Image (cartoon, rainbow, N blue to C red):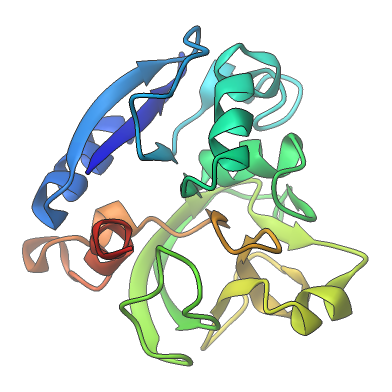
Length: 216
């Protein structure tokens, strides 16, 4: 399965995602921000980092680059799209997932391990977990506080993907830290599954996010 990894100026988790996808049995390749045609790829991952230095706000500049049109076309073709951290911010910025990821409640950058609950297994990225399974992955963000005025709708449509389990470090509404679109194919998560893809890193519980793409 060929999976494209989007690269923006300021992306810094692209190689980590590449490695995790290889471990999962996928065939990853890089896609630059200027590329519109993504037809060669069966799935897309937008990695973490600081695209365009988070100028204006995280994801704002990346949201108006040519590759976004290619991502929207991929969504129309029912191809899985995963946004991690800055990637999640970008997906929210362009309206491919509901809500926003805004500045942390304490206005500080948070870099730590977090316990997370898998709230749905209907996405290509969570289909290898058990519903309500608690997993451990790192977080690293300054603008990761999730907010939406339609939280009840997300519950009704099973669009909440991950929530913080033991604490809510950034003040997200109902501790939500991962959401998907109504179809479940576009997924935005603030934690970093690629940083929990091998036991030597402290956890391999994030690898199923990438194995799930291949399984799907």
